[in-house]
Length: 152
Image 1 (cartoon, helix red, strand yellow):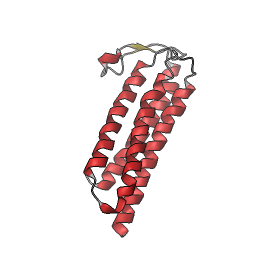
Image 2: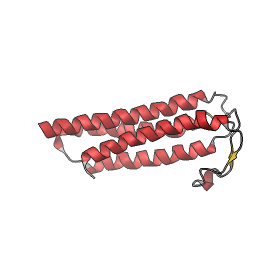
Image 3: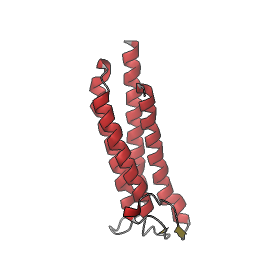
């Protein structure tokens, strides 16, 4: 995988975080039924999660957020330890930190929609959208750094 591919991967990750955010407070809010989605995470009891209009349970969204967090940790680790181009070393930690923050926000965002903490579901949207924006900024910063290195 070359440098630009990894940058586009970061941006796709950010897009997925945004989609998760919008899905949790938009699409799932309109259906008050038992949905057999998100069967991947049996540890979180995600299968047949009941979504009420108030989003009292959003375990499926939390599962997706957890997967995003794992992906972000892997991406940041690979990014820090595998990249050895001199021209953009100063960008490396900034991008890795943004990717990690994106993963953390993507995971924490849906937790606010569960209802145990007294927050409204819109907090879930704002936090996970922040995750997506951070990831997209990280990808853009990486692309700028790569182009600088190429043109120097």
